[in-house]
Image 1 (cartoon, rainbow, N blue to C red):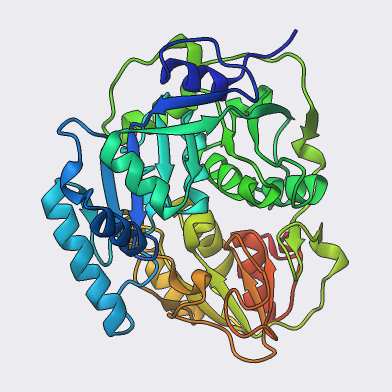
Image 2 (cartoon, helix red, strand yellow):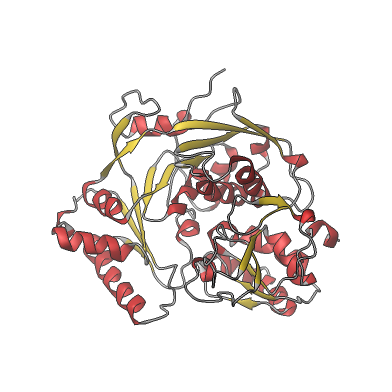
Length: 418
């Protein structure tokens, strides 16, 4: 049975309900636009240069402005851009997430983006919201500005790539390990301009934090979007966030033909070695590499469930490598405080950072030094991404990161399970 593509279905519903096939060029209505404090100023430049700032339609798409990459501002230029974007938010009535609110790709997943929506963001990891059964993709700053003003944008309809997920994760294996496994399988262009669409019996058990992580990282294989269907788990997640709506049955689908099939029970803890997120190996093949610094956070693995898993492993232990923990949002930080998990991190010797991107972007708040070895739960490890080009960054799950911080060397987290 040939599966129906969610991506094509959403593009169809947002472009006049005409049938959309892979490769078609469509002009589609956009529901929401994201700007952050890196790309937002560039979009604002375009708006000012073209005189389009005042041309935004009264009933345009929702616009979100998030200060996450340079938050708090690390220099005068960043502070100036924050001020410009605060002004833009007032003029447009945009939703502003100011310093300390967190990472856009967690904040907009906390009840803002809804199933069936078409969302664009001037940030490549906008693809994260595909976990919410939405068509979400990154665009350039000029395109984001155009979409915010006109409420529409053109797209080339992507060809779907169906991935069947079967079974359950084994001990100390999670969504990050699945994401890394798929990147190793696909390579940097294996899903170029494709819509990766997940289905299978595993979805009955796969929680939203894992789905968000998987969707987030598929852009590293070139995917245009990476989507999970509307199901009971997604509706439960949204209800807990206070979202009670009815959605089209078109957003659901069952099993059928597939391009890739993954048995989750056969996965081991994985790591992406330098110089790219697709240079993936099982952790046990690289065990023993000495580690200087561990970062647990980012839009990939800074969610409550990620940090709670790391805290469980760290409880009663002290770290040998320095450890930085940054919650993905203020809500996450609040939950950690209520559950007493901050005390576990502090007791283990960790430093807690302000909710946001932290050092992932390489701008501030904990970049590495020359030649250091870093274990990071973020999504990119290109040379120079998180410090000088000589720093070597390994991407891993929160459990692998926490275990490596304890041992001071890269280690399979299953060895430290109690």
